[in-house]
Length: 294
Ligand code: ADP
Image (cartoon, rainbow, N blue to C red; front, side):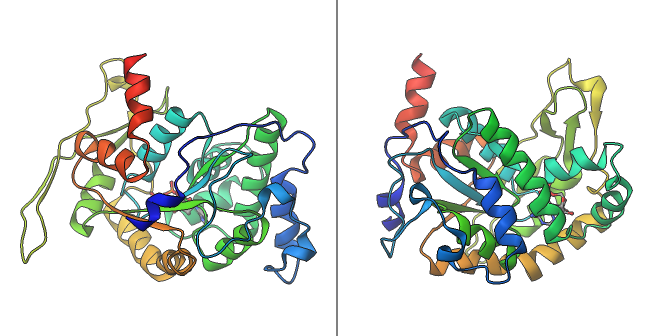
């Protein structure tokens, strides 16, 4: 697979304390009228990528990856597993929105209304939440990221592309019948944030499409009394989120496809089947084995 050649084989770290934070470039680019001018934005050299057609492996920083995919596909699950494996932050804009929504801040009720209808939050709000999160991470010495849920519009993708190099975009794919069932079966532990699923998905293969089996992902006994459902995981709202994904976020896949950054990954089943295959596709199988053996 051609894409393998640009997956980092070694993930190196350096200190970036002298470099202006990425968060400030994101905020600045949002208020700038032209979004694609790297000269205007004065992107620091460690963030620039000039060697087409494929982005080079990052040599002096941690990876900067994006996870795309429909609601319920498992972006959060796989991004968070990779984050632990690679020691880089997993930043989910959906989590940032929910944190803000559950706070007593002024945005809270506005966000609740938007999210509970399955609509997208404005680019202004998302950029502001993401910039704050990046700023806080940079202050703690974080570098690199796995973004989950951002970018979700072409405008967000242009802003990101204008300020930094995304090394790789993983597009997780799953049959639409499974997505609704997975969202409806999702349960979250309100104490530890653990993500579980009561759905047992067993879709037979037809017309050349392979069948798919995904076993439920039960919560451990200590989480069971604290399980909750997301308010936007109702049938009506999930269908609206899927509609909006197809209309507004699907073009983001093409945005990265033409920049040759997109790794398409068809989920072959649940975590036991998909995780090793994803690591293989990312050229990271060796890393998982080291950790398992440690
Ligand atoms: P999903 O399961 O639909 O992928 P997320 O947890 O990523 O859900 O996001 C939850 C909600 O937060 C979205 O439906 C949307 O309202 C809001 N949201 C998250 N990320 C973005 C974004 N990049 N742009 C606009 N709205 C967003």
